[in-house]
Length: 271
Image (cartoon, rainbow, N blue to C red; front, side, top):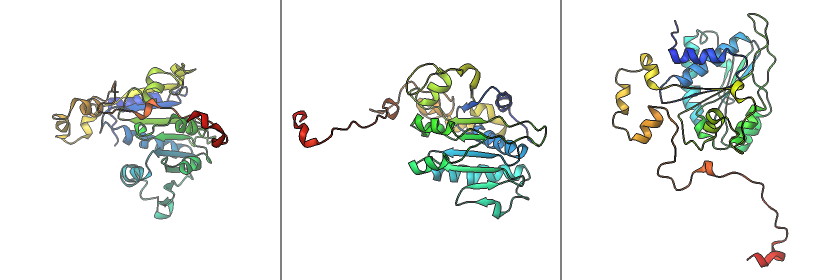
């Protein structure tokens, strides 16, 4: 029997709110964020036949190791689905799992432009950005938002699914788009307030101490001798005010369209 932590129950309550579309679980490591969000996707896929759900991460290989090879198999066994999902239902090349009711859970890396564009060819009932701190370009997130659409209906009450975007992260710098979007409620690329932020966006801090019932007896001791910077991010789960030890931070820069100089030979006066 699954026993959720109080923090996971808070997150579950937020997910049940039809007004909330964008939900972020932020905090320290081993706090149960990834486990719970993947579990939520499996539940949504089971309740809404023929629905499609996406789990993505900046690096495809990390996604393969962390979720395809680890979290997902454990949860499928826990839900009793490993007995009804055969090898033919798991396409490792495409990182796609097909459930008995026709629903699909797909996993995609976002580390090349081609992979991002491939995601845009399909619409999804749920999009989950795992380890969002790895994604530097907010434009990638905006592209994902345009794919959040599904008309599948529940096998329980016949209601249409409410599309949701889930995000999790070990908090990076306050310059990162996750902080600006979810905490400050502004557009990360422009800084102006988001329309409907207080109704559509939600974030919850989840730390290892909140998940102690599911951790090894000595796990919390691993943070004892960590640097304050690492402890702040991975134990206390807090955004940092600056990028310690970095001269330049990627979040300080924006992308612009290149300016055409025409025939360079005719513009030697700029040299």
